[in-house]
Length: 172
Image (cartoon, rainbow, N blue to C red; front, side, top):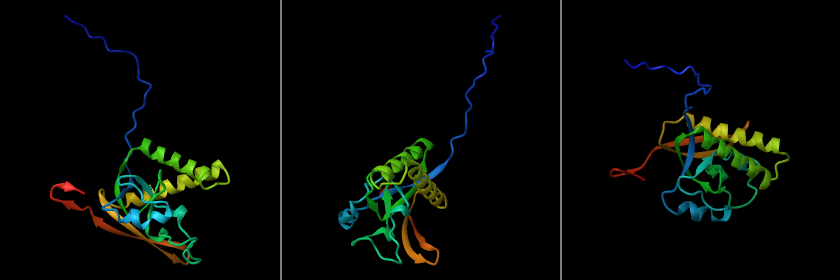
């Protein structure tokens, strides 16, 4: 007879369920974004993580800071800071989300001159949380576009939703 002894060691690891989060990725159907946004730092790469870009929006009531400016109709890439017209709603894991937040903190401090690391952290957290909340309101794998307009409260955003384009059996 074989006796199997169970271990008396209790695991100290707590396994938490993976939180399902959504975020946005740039969609590039052709080179039109590259041509259109060349004077504004370029276009986001296809599949690059993007945020709503509220931090990069001009005051529409006061006018744009420079021409041309497409802040009213674009999303902003986290790493390249390029712009895109169409974003896809997709899942993101918590580690990738945290990485995006850190990239934005660095961008706000080093490139945009945030008054303090704490202010940059708060702005990055707001931007990432807003984008995740926005994406959570849409089904997976749809494409969205944005149109920003002045409102009595500041800037209003309207989103158009499109079914993901399919050609044959291949996703575009």
